[in-house]
Amino acid sequence: MNSYVVQTHHLSKNYGDYTALRQVSIRLKGGHIYGLIGQNGAGKTTLMRLLAGLAFPTEGSIELFGHSGKYPLQEERKRLGCMIEHPGFVPYMTAKQNLKLHRMMRGVPNEEIEDELLELVGLADTVRKKARDFSLGMKQRLGIAIALLGSPEVLILDEPINGLDPLGVIEIRNLLRQLCEERQMAILISSHNLPELYQTATNYIIIHKGEIKQTLTQEQLDERCKHHILIRCDQPEKLTSVLETELGTLNYKVMPDRTVKLYDCLDQLERVARAIHDKGIVVTKFNVEGETLENYFISCLGGEGDA
Ligand SMILES: Nc1ncnc2c1ncn2[C@@H]1O[C@H](COP(=O)(O)OP(=O)(O)OP(=O)(O)O)[C@@H](O)[C@H]1O
Image (tube, rainbow, N blue to C red; front, side):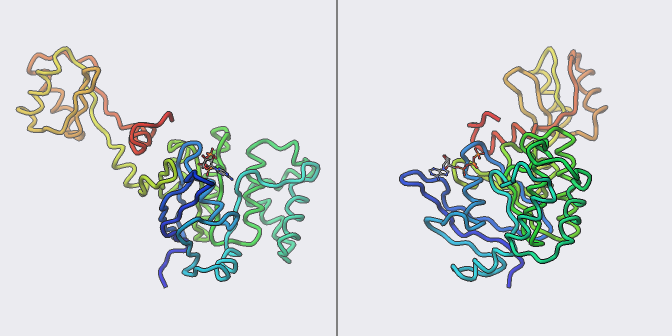
């Protein structure tokens, strides 16, 4: 048996003539947090609904814990916990009452799990507060607690940090990291943009118009958003000739605003500065910078993004 807990094979979903997902093949392992990133309408929720069994694929197949086929999948889906679209709360009930309701509906016998989960998601001290008075972050955390009721091995969360303030994002990030490390869960979380999920996920799956554009690890992402020295000066042509002849590099780019990005010599800033200065070039900017995550995300989408 392979070590993937979730696999999809050429999964497609049509709504009438419209193809919401096209030939999507992904593989998830325990102990990783996968960020599913795509703009509005990219197909994130559709993919999650297919995995959760809330909709059926037009083509392709799903494998959970090495099993596929209608009845084995029904069985294996008990090992999944999902929060997709709006978590269903009763507004006039407290967090604990909502959790109890879902526990009973799910047939989870262990009553102690209610307090354990409220503690885990940081809602233990909201004793009297009704769900209708919860902040967005509290609602997200209650949704995650409900998804964790069956002690799942795979957690699927649709936009769990969308709309949260920076502190809320950090809290959810810490919770997901803890679940991933302590329980070796595979966690799939969706988001509209890459920077929002940066450092929450360990792996990234970029989806655009129903197709997977890129899958990469955190390390690969960091490598691709690679750093450079940004130089602005009075004579860019002379600068590039200095880079080539004095520093022996062709690894630079002249930008439309005539600044120059040098991808080499990042550990030799003084040598670069001296070589430029010695040729009488007047430098007005000399900074180490990196490609922004936004720009990288947009480039993955073929420059079509508005993120
Ligand atoms: N039941 C449906 N009937 C028809 N079209 C649908 C249905 N569900 C989704 N779609 C369409 O499929 C496409 C993908 O939708 P989906 O909700 O999966 O995108 P998403 O990436 O989750 O977007 P968002 O970030 O806005 O939630 C959209 O164009 C959407 O309008």
